Length: 242
Length: 373
Image (tube, rainbow over all chains, first blue to last red):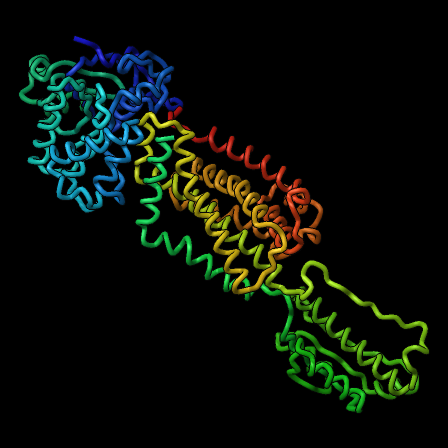
């Protein structure tokens, strides 16, 4: 299997505070990699370093074959990103959002014209293409944001708590979309707070106090921790941290 | 280039979709131009005058009549006591108290010399200064008329007398609006440029889309150009509208070339938008950005020579205005529109503006980061 993300002793310090403390891991092509941890465990900081938003203090990391120190802009060309904070423009229509992000990812006018109906059809959003994004239900917005993160057909997509605040059915639908993309060879790097979602991942890592406390497929972790569910593992790690 | 096109299209869509934004950009400046141009008028009328007439003679009445006839003065009160006059001055019911002593006419006739006393309320220094000047002019007139009549001394037999005649260049009618409108236009264009540009980038920070932009391969120069160009265009259109309005409504003269005005505005707006960008790189919310923009703008406008001449500022303040872009543009507008100056006459302004544009934009671009430290 191809390694698409690799981190070695990756560290980020803010003054005296070490947000991410020498984490090492690898993520393979087509994998759904769950990145878990309590609030403040350092997930978002780690993700920001991998997406080229934040410069690491020390350690090594490669994403899509590019170095996070020297080639952050090349990384950006090859990854998709969707964050918990809403990343679409609410005062633009569905169609205008797709046009804009397609355009700045370097798609040609022709490609954009071809992509829009295809994408809207897949999402079942054809009827609302001329509606402002702010008028859509949250679940639809999230699916649209996910599709837009994939518009330039990146090899890796980073999802930062993509399903916050929606009902279980919508979440389920969202994960089906994620599975489809993974089946097509897209690597999914996802952070979440929902432990049932963690079960959907091929492998998960659990962070506590800036370190990776556990890493492996959900089944293996449950065996190792002698736990019934991911919830138990999460709680024991989070408590151990305190 | 393509990327910039996509950003521009997005920006314009957002601006034109915003229901509050459009009138704010195009209507408010016109309204402000109308109001400010009529209000920012330094000619002093309605100076309240209290006359203490202790003489009650034909001469004193004649002098009072001359004051009453002047369009600058409003005669509010005549009394016999200086104390009453002073009380009016204290109560702000009078700006000026003219005291005519009891022996005014007598002395004038016998000794060919008499004294008057003026008390001026100097809280409003402009009004006080001008009021005193107008009053002196009226008294001088009165004096001359009397001499001619009573002493029967025709003008030409008095070799000691001379008149000063003026001619006003570049604004022959002393039209205040012709002087103020170009300056106010600068202020409005600056307001739109600085505030909108300052808010715009910060808004993306506030709603979180900046993070999404920062994980795209967009180059920061493309982003900045895409963000600022719309406001550069809007501010230029606004300047055009303002000039047309000034010409049609206030009949301001346009002596020089409009190419020079817009050419200079093009550089000037780079400075203003660069300042807006710089502000937005150091702030996190629209309120913070507004506050700083407002602070900067007030200082710049006050020290721009728009309302008070730079030449009458203290030395250190004059030096501060060297770094005030508004001062340069106000000056250029007046020079080109009223005097008809060309590129050669405003070349120093152009050099200064180019240097400022370069400095401020370099600083802003360096300060804007896609990758956090």
